[in-house]
Image (cartoon, rainbow, N blue to C red):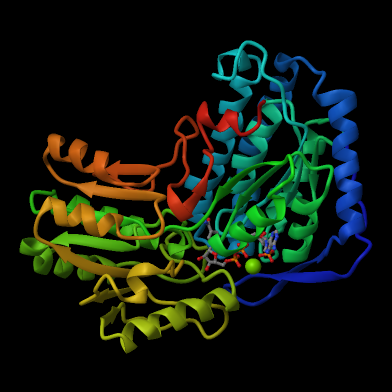
Length: 450
Ligand code: NAP
Ligand code: MG
């Protein structure tokens, strides 16, 4: 089912951030294109999808999940080409988690009376979904799988710099014989996203991206009947106590901030380390960082790939330079950067105070800000001293301390002796300026049901 149509407006190129090579030219959907997609979604909602029994919708979702597994290599290569992330991450983390998400929500499609929304919960209608470039396919899965399971149809806009796997997903929907109009992908940049969330016939808006754009969207839909979920930025504290298993903690710190080049909203970008072990921990951390392999995203030995865009690289450089200017001390892995493409070496700053901008603002790159603390109370206070509240990590040998600290942290997800673990059964979302609403798990259904 479904078809690819030419855009009415202009087009733009998408490149490989590792080589700056042009990968494809993609249509920039204008307001008329968005309108056509919303109309297609409305028709499919009224005539087919909202009327279909859940057990039938489930069959399509299971089919999509299986095709994602079958075409996993292709999806992983395309994701790494367009995004710059290492193939071992797209192959071993992103794509399997995407398939898991579809399998998980397929299981819910005929069990919605247990979703906690009453005996006969109803879908909302047409969902307008806007996603960022850091996990293009995974964010698509987080948006589309629960929406479809609940009986909604969708129009999704991928990020300007990473549209390709969303288009391949559209092909997968065709392969799965999904009825036309149930899933619509419109490529474009900010204006396309704006046209989508502002469209009067969209019933539900789901957004992941920057807090700034999230606030603009909240303003744009205020006073309408649209339901909204926003998943925004973060500045997570990764707290290491003196009794923590140090080598495991070092691995968790590295995973927390250097996974996906630090382009992770829940990245552990503030390391809070207990003063008594800070010297030893930092020594070991620097040694470990020196073994990270940066380079070709398609090489399966690569740990750190390319920064997603020139624009993002500029932002990372500016904030890091501010770190120098404000008096923090920069240490970076010594390595030769490729001459083409966008690269930034794994970096840490010590001597960071809470007032520094590198301790407050989301850098969204491979840059760790290190702060120290003396007591658990001080750790909690510093961890919570942020406008964000998406995630946090706690490293300690003491179970009681994990529970008491986690309880006091104002963050949507708290990992204990691990970091950046994702599972479709677990809800994910923020406190404060990290946004509202939950994605994943049973909670994730609430955003798509009335
Ligand atoms: P962004 O501008 O918020 O982009 C997110 C998505 O929203 C993209 O698809 C974007 O389109 C679209 N968009 C932009 N303006 C819009 C508008 N007015 N109405 C509707 N949709 C709109 O984020 P970014 O520019 O890519 O990154 C900027 C910063 O945001 C990063 O440095 C990072 O700190 C943060 N960020 C956070 C996350 C997260 O997962 N929480 C993800 C990405 C970025 P285009 O980008 O295609 O133009
Ligand atoms: Mg943008």
